[in-house]
Length: 266
Image 1 (cartoon, rainbow, N blue to C red):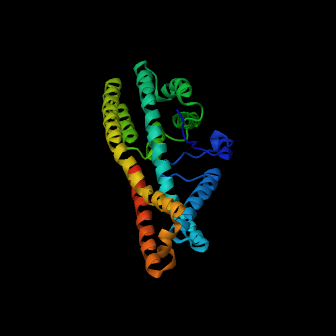
Image 2: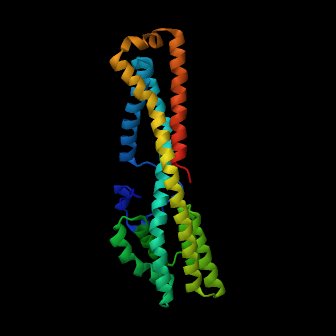
């Protein structure tokens, strides 16, 4: 399964004992991602600006506005990363359940689950790195078991992970049937994930329709400029035409923002 790297190459070189936990609630573009985003977004917005005004100066100004969409793009990547983390955490839950059932503690369950998760998601998988981070914390006794687990739950920014940790810690504290409670919690979380997956399938068609509607004005405008430039001359040469083009451009940008909101729908 392809994943987004949670660490840059420089961060991967940092020894695990010096690393900080990943904050999944906030995604920040690394240097390479930022360069690619700036190049692609500026070119796209510059092209759109030129189509609407036939002016290099205005097109350059419109291109600069692409920076405003950086936050939306980071939100999109952040949500994608959290979705992948939750899928990987599902496999870890089964490993914890098996480990606890065999009489082991959470640290042993994490170590035993790691090998299988590496085969599924590689050493750079989100959940594998989180296991390494937690095992290191256990080995160095920097925090209590519950603190280590809640640190991961809080950083994940995912209700399902937080719920699982809540149940596990409470059951360990009260001395309940840990195996039974964990399996029951896994079933609830899996049912929720299946429902969310079905909803995403239903919404996916509407998302695609929205994307097509958003780019249609650009396609039509480019086509008219190609086959009949004189047809659009009044739009570029008169004040009224420029006002209409400006209103149309604002509508296009609003549509793009709307599409990002749909894509980031939870």
